Picture (tube, rainbow, N blue to C red):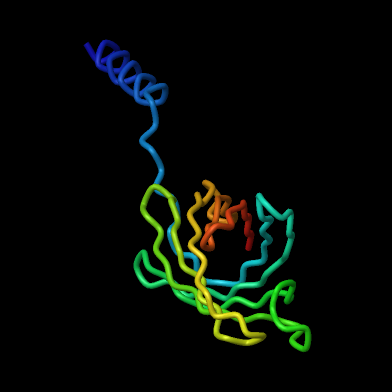
Length: 138
C-alpha cells in the first residue's frame, strides 16, 4: 500500500513538472537610466537619447536629453519631459514633450513592448506626420 501511494505521488509530481508553466508577469518598474535611439521612416534621421525614469505602480515619468538634429543651430541638446504607462503584459506607451529649448516644443507619442528581461523596449513613434522606430535599453 505504501509503495502504491509513493507511485501515485511520484506521478502527480512528474505531471506537475511537465505541465505548461504559468505565464510570468513582466517587471513593469521602469525606474532607472535608459539609453536608446530612433530613426524616422520618411527622412531617415537617426538620433540617440538618454532618459531618466521613475515608476509609480504602472505609470512612469522622467526626462530625456538628445542631440539636437532639428532645432535651432545654437543649441547642442534638446530636453523633454516623459509621461507614460506600462501594462502588466509589458506594452508601453508614453509621450515625450520637448521643453522649448532650441525652439522645439512639440510632443511625440511612443508605443512599444518591454521584453521579458525588463531591460529593452522596442516600438514605434509618431510626431504629427513623422513616424519611425525606436529602441531603448537599461
